[in-house]
Length: 438
Ligand SMILES: *Cc1c(COP(=O)(O)O)cnc(C)c1O
Image (cartoon, rainbow, N blue to C red):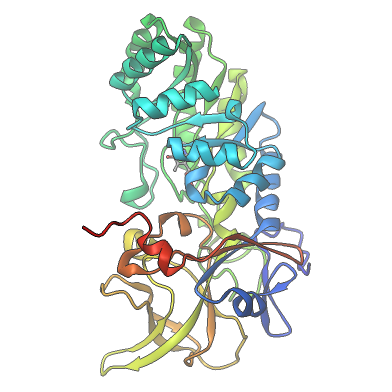
């Protein structure tokens, strides 16, 4: 594996070697030859490195990292994380099933989400999850009810909404009082009282999660200090074992490769680049004195920069207004640009010295929202050329759909010079599986 050494740590292992883009020790062109495009490629080394770096930054705390499965739930990725000691944050029965299939442990799982069904609660109780992170009083009653039926005691934490502004996209901000998540901080003590009175619940912790893709430590510091006093109060009354601080650490999407630096933290507008060490430094002063186990639920941070979506240019269409480069990947494969105005760096697999031109990079789906870049300077691309859409390891494949009857993509996990097909490309038959003619 080639990786430029700097005094900073690399957070991704994609780089050009002799003009050809590689993931760790493998040429992406080779992967595209073997598995076709579009295809997702993940770097195992990047995931491990990011886990290690965060885990190390949090070492002053008695902590457990519970990877947020929803960011990338391929069982090969979950298996890799389980092997290096990660717990998991799940939001559905389906995610628990995946974790167990991947060799993860239920007693290292937290179960989040505002809409848990009775079936999901029963499944999680039987498997013995570490905690239900509860989002409403109705849910407390339902969990109590199901636990009673099963003759079990359900471990719960209440998700407290600290009313802080995460300063991120409105669709991924969760910690303001107007969001649907959690219980308002002003009502938390009252709701803990309700929980304590329910016979089949065991209060185990407190949880919060303020949003996603947060690039500065201020909102985290504010949430930590706001909640630390509440947690201290609760600790005096209940048998609190942990405080779960949620996820949300942002990643760098821009300039990742074109800057020529493998270290995405070490360049650009430093004010916007929160390192894992900055994150830890901002919250440890408030969290350490609690004397509790602190849980973290990073999703995007661990896997986002570890993924690339490979795609092949199909057509270049010139209109009086614009140049459209039409690729074989589409919004159904990676919806972040359409859904969150997400920005992904797009680079050719074969390096070029040509001057950039302004273009839109779009997919074949019949929606104007089907784009990967708009009015962006990119070296001219000819039909047949391949590109990598970078930093698509989180909220990429997991949000894909069969829209326009496009088969779901293969997922390939690269580890050093080993290539593992972690999910096969769907076939035409897969597309209509389960459908019935009248
Ligand atoms: C989505 C989510 C996470 C992970 O968020 P990232 O921004 O990917 O770190 C963690 N906890 C909860 C409760 C979530 O909903």
